[in-house]
Length: 276
Image: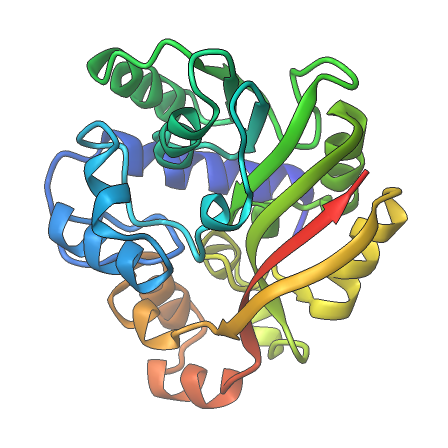
């Protein structure tokens, strides 16, 4: 798959999520339409609590993550946070409460519709210390050495150039700055019929790297003390109700049961931290 085609499909998929008004069933890491109750269930399942869910503007939580980087980020008052792939702003708003009015949160997303939704959510929640910038995470619209921490939630796996993403994260962090990301990684290569599916890429699967390669990419960017803080098997059952995942299965002329069997426990949700 070509990088430009991947970006186009990802942009279109998540653009549809941002503008979706009909609350159909289905949710997960990929861009399905996720109703409020389902989004809460997914978020609680990946590490958020009731207080988190109630401390963000309505419409900010789309249930698209695979972990909770905020819980492990140890954010402090006055820090500057950059969120890679900020979506509707869920993690940004949680981070804003941690860094206070003397801090700043910058959300970066390449989807126009998501940026518009996030900005509307910020206005709705009267969030003054959060801003959202349109841009690709491989080319961050953020100054050198300006951030204290980079966060991201199940987005770097969507990039066709993950090494560039980590290099950009290194560039914008201050010396001593840190990254805390939640993402999907693999313990073994995926079957070809999944690897070659654009829909499976958009649904967070075929774009995922092997775990060791993912950690090596962070180190290659210059980071030190690279550590997997938490890891667990990604609940493949989540994908059974994910529109994007089901279409990928259909395209491959196979069944969801076969996909679950082939993947087994080789898909992980990880929380990774590192220091510049």
